[in-house]
Length: 120
Image (cartoon, rainbow, N blue to C red; front, top):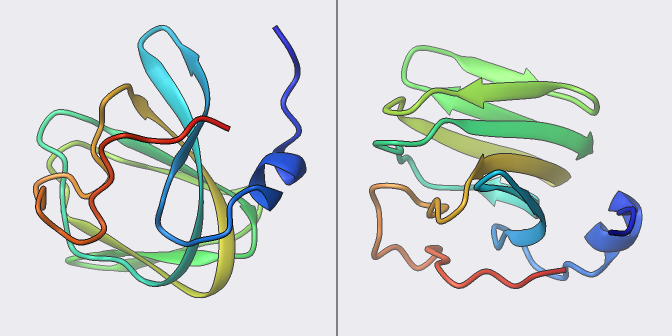
């Protein structure tokens, strides 16, 4: 058991939209990723997703509105809700979701789909 320094962990991430596992608890995973540019519209049939902005900011596009998230703010996207994260500049984001949640949800064959996540 060791503490986790988020700044050090984010410094190990050289790319965007490629989550890494920073911790696990009770069948859930704490994931870290850098966002930049637009992601893809997708949803998750069985999982809620938690997004916490550590550094930078991003917009969560929903079909009926856009929610801007700044450092220290979080959003829970309920299962089944279609969403599209967009970051104009680099954002460092902590996600919390059930182990095995695929980052592209229902878009399993996307070029951005990650299934075997690296551990930091």
